[in-house]
Length: 160
Length: 330
Image (cartoon, rainbow over all chains, first blue to last red; front, side, top):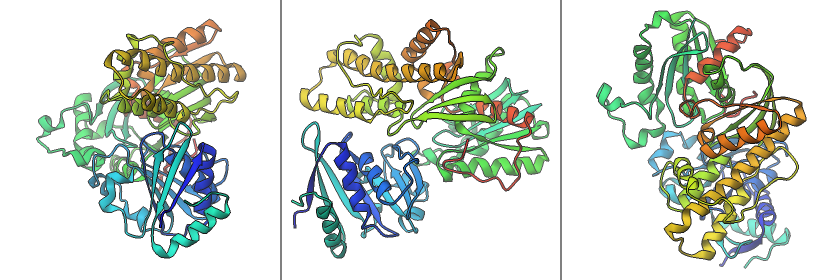
């Protein structure tokens, strides 16, 4: 099953994240992959809104701070391993607390730490289409994908 | 009064001894001293964020450089956040242990307050109130500072920090690490008007650098290969867009608050172009700009001691139940 969506502009990427969030439950891990400027942080801002993190809480890039934590319907751990050289560094920051805790973990640059990404994670790949548009590909546990497809298509996106 | 400062909020493990919140007796940062040689310890690559491996030797080095012993310490100042919880806890726990063992007061310091407090280490004339811009890899925040414990957040980045925008551009252009330094150097040789980059000046004090980064990605994609000869102009133009926004918003914030002093601090405050432009533009409208020397702009513990001393003087000490927070209130 092909499972991707095209977003046109940062606002749509953000809205797509928001739609995904409606299906997320505690313990979920969302692994984001894709090159610089492709919309990973923007998508996470949408997830935060969808998890009812208050508007006044600004969701900013954790590339330097590594982990930002937000309180919404569930705790959101926004992790970014951009500056890591390998998965061993993730162990140094106590990643088990995020991955196997009661919140939702979104991890940017997940390709650097794939060996530690749990099997129940959603994998979301972002591809550059043109200046504004991105292709966003979803994969994850079979049992959950239908629900995610439903919320995203009901939100107005075409599931390709 | 001798203050021991401890900083472990992000990458750097640092300890310093500062006298009366002003005179630096020692200022040791893990990435700057050769622990390997000095203590014969092994500091593997993966321990880059394992403060626990180096905090002991760094503390010993700070005392040794200052020529003092544990008994001479009068106050322990330690970063309580913002930062990575696991990292903060290393500094905080050892800070508590020292305060308890030496029977001296403990004071927790906000990392961003510590940054702008670095100005007190080098400047006698600066006094509150002032507007401060803390700009680094992880932060881009504007504060109105009326006292060491009377701080109001005026604005901060909505997405990427300015230092992150610079670092990621350096990486994208294959300029190597640390990105900020290479950009500073290359930009000096380039024409800052050669390329047009977007400036997110939306009539408010919050910053946004994500669009600028994406604009560079788009440009690089369109051009395919970037010739080495094009780099100076490209980097100079990109940096100019960052500096324009930082200067414009900081000066506007000061004007709106009716404040005639600006303090610039944080790792990006080491950038030559930012220092020069903010000074020139602010002073052109009657606002004085204070900037610590480059050596005190990046993370260090002397700034934590400087802030801690002032917090102590205003009655802000903490108990041993002080906790680290990834995002504390100011």
